Image (tube, rainbow, N blue to C red; front, side, top):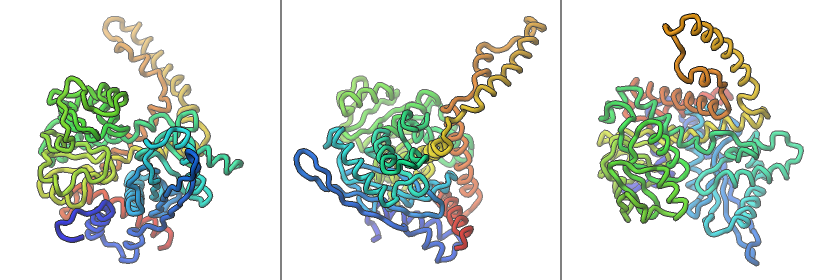
Length: 476
């Protein structure tokens, strides 16, 4: 990369990897083994649509098989290319290692604009793409497990799962070939909200340590913090909604493809989301200032900036003007390596993407385990928990009658305590624990080493060391 040249997404991942391994003591051969992408498959296939054959190009990159299956989403976007999927696959390797999900890293993409096709056409295209990957074992419960990404969702994952089942009629674990499925197709409660919920849990853990908050030049907790969100898709919407409804954050700005909304007093996230779903954009939304040049709102004064959509939205052209003292990368690669250098020099704290948006792969892991175990989480123990709690409540009620006005249970205590945890509560609990533990591992490196100045480098060091340990265990 030449000095002053904006690094590509792939170059950014390589530069950040290099920064971390320079501070580690890895044998050169092992360092190179971790760095390189093991394999990338390009498939070109035809689908008859509207009376003629259309040819599509798709990719599936496998970065690291230190653990299997490998895991990573499939995105539908016109800009998809080999470099992008290989960079994303590398990020998936490090992300899975950081949050301790037992997967290697992979990523897939199809060069397509989903808006150009109706639902039936999209199903034909998705099923044929899935067929091309399945017959090469690039979709398989024990080898390669995709998930939703940009331009895909539950619907596409259900089509892929069904296509796999049609081609593997005796595989009892067929549903585990892909995650992010609808509930009635083997999905799990909490998967749709998972990445946004993970962003919320990441911020909560950040604000639990006064040292971290002070490094960002902030004080207090999440309550009252001004937040700007770029991209109100699945991730941005859930992150913003949870932060607003449950943590008291004030969403002052929302940036979308047709501009941005800004209101220092706070925007109603649910109302904006409903408007966006109905009108396809945020223009003409009442009770807020609309800015046609949406990217400029990234530079507005706020406490927390959440880029939640595209790569490279914060780059060398605008990084110096970013005022937010704390950035949490809900998208993959929203801050380029060049911008990262500028922001670190300014003292901006960045919670990196490989950690911040790991909620999706964490809950995907739970869904994969659920599919392999063939039982809903909580089904075996929920009523037993309630029965044991009933014993305690009965004793408390007896004590309540005995002591009279001198002591009484709090209102609603009985109802809350008696209810055993359902699948959604267990998923959220597991995700919260995962995000806490992963952040603490980064924090330990960040504060414990004088040569580590930022959370991104700390995250890479933790992840790379875990991948290296897996390879060493294999005898490499």
